[in-house]
Image (tube, rainbow, N blue to C red):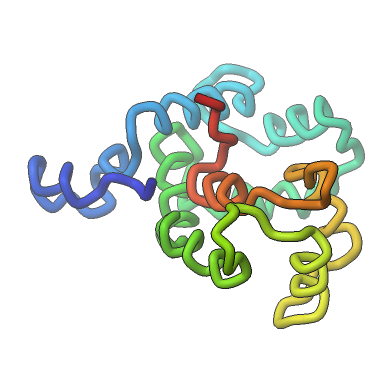
Amino acid sequence: MAPKKAKKRQQQGEGGSSNVFSMFEQSQIQEYKEAFTIIDQNRDGIISKDDLRDVLATMGQLNVKNEELEAMIKEASGPINFTVFLTMFGEKLKGADPEDVIVSAFKVLDPEATGFIKKELIEELLTTQCDRFTAEEMSNLWAAFPPDVAGNVDYKQICYVITHGEEKEDE
């Protein structure tokens, strides 16, 4: 489901970027808050270069260059507090298509409407067309979305993660 902008903006007035919280559902805001808290290693309410270095180190990325950290920090217009953090994600997601549009694109490759596409077909398309995936990118894709034993990939799950940034819990 895409961010719920229109309905909330009608209720609250056209806030534009001044009310970044209206771009997200409450559950999404909570998840971003949890991520922000993890990244804000020194718990001062601002993500700094040292916070980024520390959190990357906890994930096994040691020896990150100062220039890389500075480039990350410079993506924000000022100090990165939670509102700025949320705004940055809102700006990144603004151009993303709604989930139903992405699912419809995948359905072209699923004429029998099974909800699955063969791993080989996806791999062939992603490594030979347009912005070609590298072997490492393909490896990362299959690590995140492993095919079943028959080699089928659940494209609806991929679409959900693209638009929500998290895996859908089984109901």
